[in-house]
Length: 223
Image (cartoon, rainbow, N blue to C red; front, side):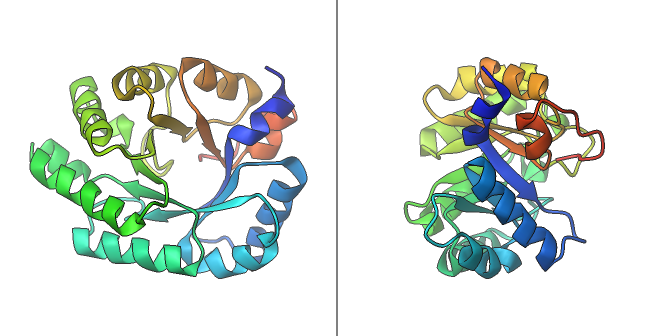
């Protein structure tokens, strides 16, 4: 696989708090120029991105319950509905890690189910934050996502102590089967992106998309 071939896998991402309108417009322009699958942005910027990307194939992905996942379920569902109303084409929600650690699996499932219902057919990715989970917890969370038939499971927010690993991506893919796997957090160069895809990733979340497709290394980006 060549670096340029990776573009169609990439959710070109800008989620840090200081990103301004100029940054988001640049993100959109880079996605248009390089053929990235989507831009992944905070929901407040959806209208701006929607205008910039109109009449293009670039999707708008946004995050829900981000970055902690500890919101009330009703808040996540409402956030999802409003984001879609504004123009989001995909939703990346953060799972409730605290409920996983409390072994409240029924609550975890209902949380995801509520957001999935609010998506009303819009693809849902569930962010596991794998760096905080045991292998058994990753498997259990993936099994729930598989049972609910979400569109993707996703490794990380990129805002915690670790990001995607090849080992976790492979474990997730093995568990979810035909469901997509998104590797995000710390994917900063071509070799890492290709390794994630070979492990089973069907989407890459990265703020270093330009570096990845140009065979370079971005040492500054966390997502």
